Image (cartoon, rainbow, N blue to C red; front, side):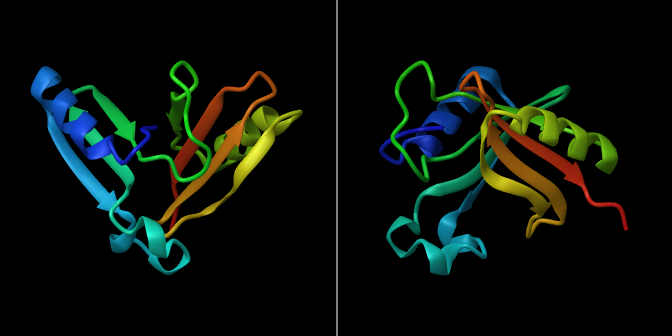
Length: 128
C-alpha cells in the first residue's frame, strides 16, 4: 500500500527493476467509483506479474500507512471451502475490513487484519 498516490510510480519502478508486466485498475475504472468521488485517480488494484510470482499494490484507501506496516499479505486459493476456513481463523481476535464475499471481478475476496496487526487479502476464483 502506498501513500500520496504513489502506487503507479512505485509499481512501474518495480517493473523497471524486476521485469514483468504491470496492470492497473483505478477507482474511476471500478464499480466503487461512485462511493469515492475524491479518489478517482488512485490505484485500487495493480499487479506486476512475472513467471512464477505476482506482486500486488494499491494506493491507501483508508488510514495513512506508516513505513513498516504498509505491507499486506495476499493469499490466492483454488478451493472456496479453504478460503472461508482461513478467513475465519485469521479474523478471530482481529478486524475485518472487507468481509469475504464475491467481488465484482468474480472471485471470493476479503481483507482482514489479524490480532497481531498483519493485513491479509484473500482471493479465490468463484466456481461456476
